[in-house]
Image (tube, rainbow, N blue to C red; front, side, top):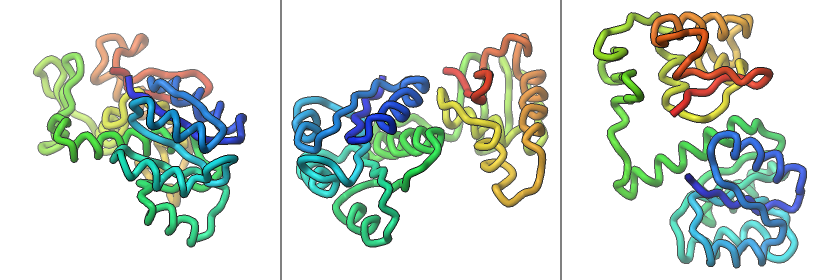
Length: 228
C-alpha cells in the first residue's frame, strides 16, 4: 500500500484529503506543523508528500528544500496562494506539482497516481503501460483492442476511451463530471447522464454479470472506479 504524508495546518482540509485518499487505497498520515513534518519525513518512508505553504514551524518552501536534499519522491504543493511567483518558487525548489485550493479530491488522487507512476518509471520499477491486463480483461492501447478471456470485444470510441481512462487510474473514484470532462472535454455541451449510459454499455460487453460488476464499480452518490 502506498504511503502518503499530508502536511497541512487546516485540519478540515487535511481530513477531507485523507478520507478520500484512504477510500482510494492509500495509507495516509497527517501532521499540522512544518518541523514535525520534517521529522516524520526523515524517520519514515513515504511515496508522496502533500504540503501546504503556510505552516507553523517550517513553511512549505523550507520543507521542499529539506526533502530534496535527501529524497526524490514526489512532492505536491496544495495552497490557497495562487500567485505565479509562489508557483514558480515551489517548482524551482523541487516540487513536482502545485494545486490551488479549492480543488477536486478526485483530481488530487489522479495527480498522486500519475506522479507515483512517473517516479517508479524513472526508477525502473514499472511494467509496460501498453497493455492493461486484469482478471481476464486485456486492453491493448497500442492496437486499441479489448479482449475478455481471449475473445475480442467491440467497443465504440467513447466506450473505449472511458474504459482506458478508468483502467489507467485503478482504485480511484471519479464522478460523472470528472469522466465527462476527461472524455468529452469541459467545453462540450451535454448531459452527464450519458456517462452512466456508456458505463452500462461497457459493462454489458466486458462483465460476466453486469448487475454485479467485477471491473467497474459504482459508488452510490459518488461515482465510479475500476477495481484491481
